[in-house]
Length: 82
Image 1: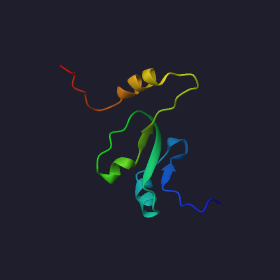
Image 2: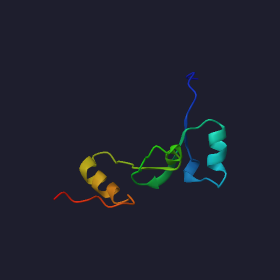
Image 3: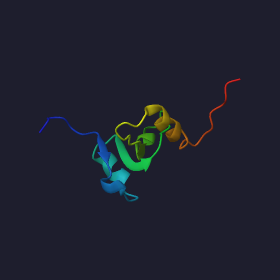
């Protein structure tokens, strides 16, 4: 239709199996999106691009509050400025 090859896959209804990412990598997908809520920490490891969390923002919802809540999903604690 568009002439472009997709490189990102979204798991239907967030469902996947142990083999899903292996198969998707073999098919050439470079990233996948889950239905899990949160912020992602991305490193130079390409595997970090599989199972990415997402944030759904409702119409009229302020971005500052949304990001403040989303940051709570990170696995590390930010240092407070002194």
